[in-house]
Amino acid sequence: MNIEPQITETPNEATAPAAVMPIPGPSDPMVLPRKAASPRADGKRALIGLSREELRAALATVGVPARQVNMRASQVWHWLYHRGVTEVSAMANIAKDMRALLDQHFIVGRPEVVTAQVSSDGTRKWLLRFDDGEEAECVFIPDAWRGTLCVSSQVGCTLNCRFCYTGTMKLVRNLTVAEIVGQVMLARDALGEWPGGTNSLPALPDTDDDDDEDRPYIPGAHNPGNNYTAQGRMLTNIVMMGMGEPLYNFDNVRDALQIVMDGDGLGLSKRRITLSTSGVVPMMARAGTEIGVNLAVSLHAVTKEIRDEIVPINKKYGIEQLLRACADYPGANNARRITFEYVMLKDKNDSDEDAHELVRLIRRYKLPAKVNLIPFNPWPGSTYECSSGGRIAAFSDIIFKAGISAPVRTPRGRDIMAACGQLKSASEKISRAELDKRAEEKEAGWV
Ligand code: SAH
Ligand code: SF4
Image 1 (cartoon, rainbow, N blue to C red):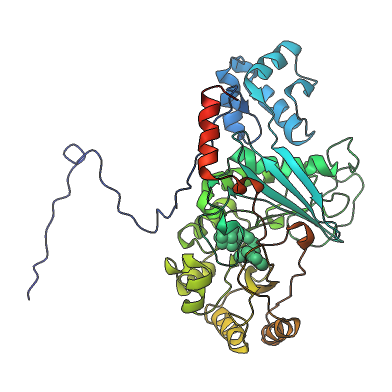
Image 2 (cartoon, protein in one colour):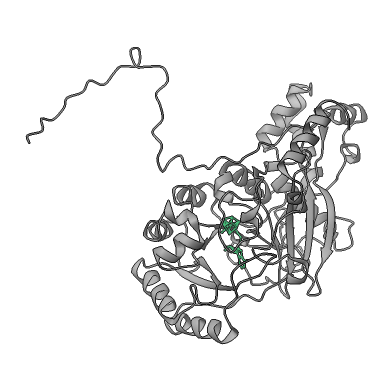
């Protein structure tokens, strides 16, 4: 059959239909969460989570005179992120009438702590409740030389990985920028790391070129407001590895991490932040260019059959596509390697052949990679078993012998259900119908 090339006229703007149906494709991968965050009942807005520009605009909107806006915004930013105040009224160098104006329209914003638990190994877990009653968990893992905060990006997760407790939650919504930044603020509150707190030490210089190593303290050295160092502070690193898929909440995660990295505020280096994705391929390049943090990828299997089963997003974005996106990840190099997370599931993904195939894939795509082997953490009703210690050691050995680092992660906080994949908030126990009923009652003013 002879197919004539079709000459189509490009409609000019005046004649083009006003709304063109978007073609679904890799640029539009978002799985819609099943719920949106609702505004506060009192109409006040949280200051935490606003970008500098948003903060300036918000101040102008409530009547801060134009010539004062920049100065007031800097003052507020300082009180929020240097001093860690939790009330507008505590912003002492802001004139009283101005503070009253701000107080009328804003709250500082912290999630409510429903429960705070401490594991026998020192790991801490907070169950947080947000303004609309939804809950998420946040975990702090102290080590000898660093302290890592595991931050959630969503209430629940839409992805249903078979070995993950969070994936079994029915109710899912994206966390707002304020709620993501709020987890970091809350952790610093709890760890006493604001000036005047129980663990407040003088700010120390930090450089941008390492992630684990301590830097010597240089007395009198210029410190550009970076309070996070492995020396002194407990909270030195952040991993976006709590509840949810961060790349399905891209804008809020990006904006939140930009606040966390802001040199005049929390000032955490991008090298101390790791974002973990189950493989939302179309968003990975943007994560590299717009956020620039370290990348971790939940690989967990090396064949289509097994990855389709345990990480269902694989049916949409397969292993080859995923590894190609890793090879293209902006900023990845031998000094900043991509971490492949691999949960060890007995007789599922833990054979010698799997380990060899993992090595082959990493080599084939020339990936600057390290592998983190995570012993499976069980949860109520989970169907998998963790591989034996001997199996995990043999698996790790094969990868190490190929010249790729493959440490086995020690499970932390298992006794308080704080380990990888064990997070699932208590609100899940309330049925959907009950939540709807409560919302109706609240609307009708019964509660
Ligand atoms: N949603 C993101 C962030 C995740 S959770 C992601 O999937 O990457 C951090 C890591 O814990 C992920 O690699 C996740 O796959 C893994 N994980 C989930 N459930 C687990 C479990 N029960 N035991 C061990 N690791 C688990
Ligand atoms: Fe979601 Fe990550 Fe759990 Fe998968 S492993 S269900 S992507 S939180």
